[in-house]
Amino acid sequence: MNGTRYAACVAASALALMLPAMPAGADATAEGIAKYREALADGNPAELWEMQGEELWRTARGPKNASLEKCDLGQGPGVVKGAFVTLPRYFADTKRVQDLESRLLTCMETLQGIPADEVAKTPFGKGEQKNIEALVAWISAESRGMKFNVPTSHPEEKRMYEIGKRAFNYRGGTHDFGCVTCHGEDGKRIRLQDLPNLTKGPDAARGFGAWPAYRVSSGELWSMQRRLNDCFRQQRFPYPLYGSDVTIALSAYLGVTANGAGESTAPSIKR
Image 1 (cartoon, helix red, strand yellow):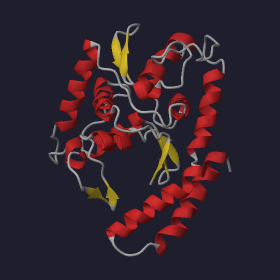
Image 2 (cartoon, helix red, strand yellow; image 1 turned 60 degrees about the vertical axis):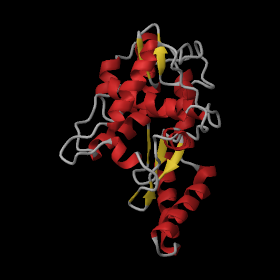
Image 3 (cartoon, helix red, strand yellow; image 1 turned 180 degrees about the vertical axis):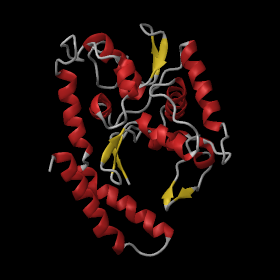
Image 4 (cartoon, helix red, strand yellow; image 1 turned 135 degrees about the vertical axis):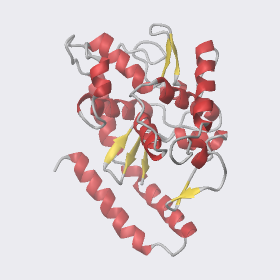
């Protein structure tokens, strides 16, 4: 059994032992889940992805046999610390606003010769997509505890924020559903889990700032792109393309809303 599967089994076993002891009632159950997450925080299985991500960053790979150590995440070539809490942002070389995952696609293609289109088509948790999830785990961990400072000075950054705000509030599909349905008011809950009001700074920081995260229910680490894709699924919308403008715009809206209101806790641990 590899380290990832072992960690998943340990986490699942811990949950199985803990949940029966919870008092009855939604509030008590939610409190028990919160305590469970806190108990696992020191041994978050996401650490396995973090270690792999750091190794991938420094390892020469791809047709060009190069590492990612010259990748510019917005703080200058090779600078990782503090980058996560300033993304998405505008990049002059691509002439577009990019989040962490789409920026990594650019670096992998330009520095390593790994085709971005092929990586984007790969299913989550497979091949280079799995490598990207490891990279985002390590890169986000390097900004843990820092407050969000997503820029809005460039016209494209302002535009993407506005698009993200509209996308967040757009309702449609078979269930007249939107991001705002679950995350636009205080005091909402689904499956005994409290839902953050992502239109408010502190909640946006707690919500957006927790991804990537290790999902106990699946035994995998999910990036923000993967989290947003699952939100589209629950809205009964078609999956967006990986690295598409709509997912980047949503991240821009959430990141800007979180500015100065809270610290990044990613990679965190989720149910």
